[in-house]
Length: 164
Image (cartoon, rainbow, N blue to C red; front, side):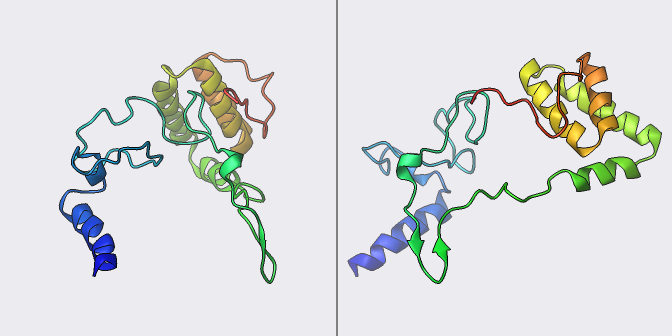
C-alpha cells in the first residue's frame, strides 16, 4: 500500500495542481532539485527569472556535466548516450524552403527576421547568420545586410560560437 501511495500522490498532485506542485512550500523538497520544469500551470515563484533553461546558450545557463554521465554498458552492442547532432542535416530543408519562396516572399522573410533580431546581442546575431548561411548563402547575406553586419569573416557551416 505504501508503494502505491508513492505513485498515486505525486500523480494526483500533477493532475490537480500541475507540474509545479513540488514548488508549493508544503511539497517543496528541502534539498536542491535540479530539473528544468519551468513555466506551466500554477507557477507562483521566481521561475528562474530570465535565465535560460536550455543548452547551449550564451548566458551562462545550464551545461551538461560529464561527471554525471552514465557509464557505457555492453549489451548486444554498446549502450551509451550519443550526440544527436552528429550526422544530422539541419540545413538542407530550411535552404530548400527559402529557395522555393518567390523573391518578394524572401525579402519579407528576411525583413521579419531582421526586425526580430535587431535587439539581440551581436555575437548571437553572428551565430544565427552562420546558420542562415549554411542553409542558403543569399539567406544569410540578406539577414546580415539587414542587420548591418559583415559576413566575410563568417564561414558558412561554422557558426560563431560564444559563451563556451
